[in-house]
Amino acid sequence: MERPLFRRLIDVGETGAKLTIYFEGQAIEARAGDTVAAALPAAGIRDFRAGPASAAPGSPFCMAGAC
Amino acid sequence: MAVIGAGPAGLVAVAVARQYGIETALLDEQPRAGGQIYRNIGAADEAMTAILGPEYAQGRDLLPSRDDPGRHDIFGASVWQITRDGGIYYSHESGASALTAEHIILATGAIERPMPIPGWTLPGVMTAGAGQTLLKNPGLLPQGKVVLAGSGPLLWLLAAQYGRAGVDIAALVETTPRANLHRAALKLPGLLREGELLRQGRALRRELKRLGPRHFKDARGLRAVGEEHVRALCFTVGGQEHEIPCDLLLLHMGVTPNVQFTRALDLPHDWDDVQRCWRPRSGPGGATEISNLRLAGDGAGIVGARAAALQGRLAALAVAGEMGEAVANAVAEAGNELSRRLAARPFLDRLFAPGAECLDPPDDTIVCRCEEVTAGGIRDLAARGCRDVNQLKALGRPGMGPCQGRMCGLTVAEVLARSLNLPIEDVDYFRLRWPAKPVSMHELAMFAEAEDA
Image 1 (cartoon, rainbow over the protein chains, first blue to last red):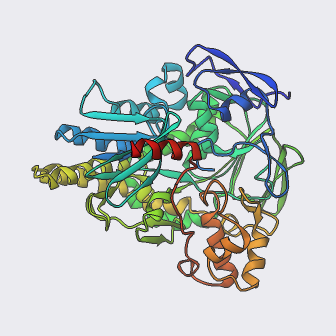
Image 2 (cartoon, rainbow over the protein chains, first blue to last red):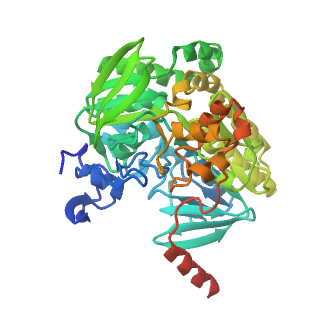
Image 3 (tube, chains in turn blue, orange):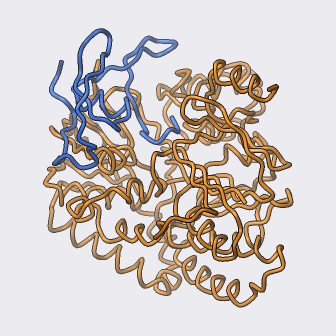
């Protein structure tokens, strides 16, 4: 796993509960209330998906449910 | 009365309707009220509001102060269809639900205008709005080298917010063409009428100067480069080439109305030549050609949070008026304040109007992110006789992916119109169909069973 692009600011928005999610079989620490799109980059996951035509790596873009 | 969208317009519409005793349902995708601008405001602590600033903290005033049995706020609700007779269909807690309303106010807000540049689909490239969203909830700050690029007030605001949080910005790369300044200057008197906005803008600029990130202006030919991940932003200023290494590139090119619902409802839309976007047609109180369906806020044309709140007020007052309440004075008062708030728009719209490069990107730029259709691919189809965006969609697939054209609709039309040398109205906009958001077969099947029961 690479160095995460983001770090958590003094637990703002945290409801307290740490939890483990699995991405491609890999255990990742997340917080209750995280969106998946926020939890993965916070844990250092950079490549989320392969493009439908080129299979190029891709990751979340707008974080607002538009893209 | 049902309100879709819990940003400033929707929150005020509900609050005003409740003052007149109108029972309300408020639906929003997010887990809490606030919309994009006041996202997570109800849960933000002092440390967070200190970073996000006083304009964000103003959002607290829009939250309900006490429990109200006549007010039904449904959060985490993704509305995927509404009907002309008041039906609202939505996904909530892993199931599909429906309600009917006598009046609907659509307050679905804005989305960021796509800023297609070569390499913008690389991991590590996001929008400035995305950076701000991650800060508001769950409170993520970038680490490593961050570059902000594009045009618009949000770029300055995010740079300041990151600065307050101690994030170093490697560079702020503004693409605003110098010519925009001259066009905007003619509209300066309007800006001077909206004192609050002018003060905010000046304070932000002072703050940026103090923070002192490398600041480039009138940048051209932006390219995100990297293989598996963005490595640098390349561009030119006055013919000189620059390459700024970065781990995270945040792009922004202003915001445009989210027209997914109004398009799917087949409402008429008018082209805004300054902002280069479509606006659903609406009249006083947000009235549309569908009786009992009103629009408020940025979804009806970009106005900003303060004006959006006033439009929400006016839409709710119009509903109360139809129910026989005496609202004339309140309407006049809100209308006056709205026109003052809107006075600054002609200046802002011209200053931050998207430049030609954004509207007509180079051939190798991906325009449709979902289906990976390039600007060159669109020009090829134009050369082969494609005359409008819906024909183009059928032949080349732009706009067919899960975002339903939100990220490419405007660019596809601009590229095609310029390629054919036609007015943008002639190439039209994507015909949008329900559902407006992805909905699972499981949800639909469970929903049908519940309806039969």
